[in-house]
Length: 265
Image (cartoon, rainbow, N blue to C red; front, side):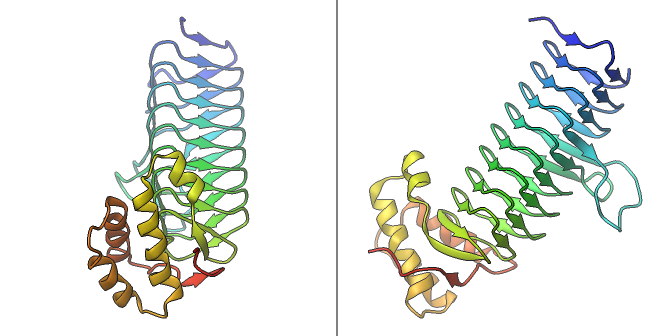
């Protein structure tokens, strides 16, 4: 299908636009932007300078991509919003570019950001991440692959959310949330994300090992170093256990220590 650019769209000649790109009424494409093949840009959407869109992204009406960061330290300069392929950005979302010369905010592939979600400067969003309506991701946060965040959830700056974790609506996340869990409310873990694990083909033996890991981390009275020692000494640690160990060992803010119910039997 050939490209289609509505006559009311404002497209800077210094932008780089691929093939089969649709640009809707009153959209604005600023200079120093790249829009990959097969993308669609909805009415009144703005693609600001420094934005790099991969292929086959869908940008809906009034989405705002690549605006300067909401950071009092921002003093201008060149920074970027780097976006992968096949993402869906619904109405009214805001994605800001990096703060600091040459820095960037990074969005992976196959994500779905629902209406009014916000991603701040220098955040890193992995692949197949879902942000439901009004989710707020603060600066320098790191949301790993296959994470789902419920409506209105807020993630504090510099915080990490581990792979395949699901965060409940309205949650307030201010310390690192380990991979593979359910978390909600005020930084509270409630168990394993069993639906997500099964949907993504995690083997039963890995799920059993993760159940035990959560007991050691949250229900045994062990310190984090003590729980880690048990995890390292598991007879045949699975790939998921190794990932959990690495996540905890590399945490700068520390993982949440609040557990919302008894460990699963």
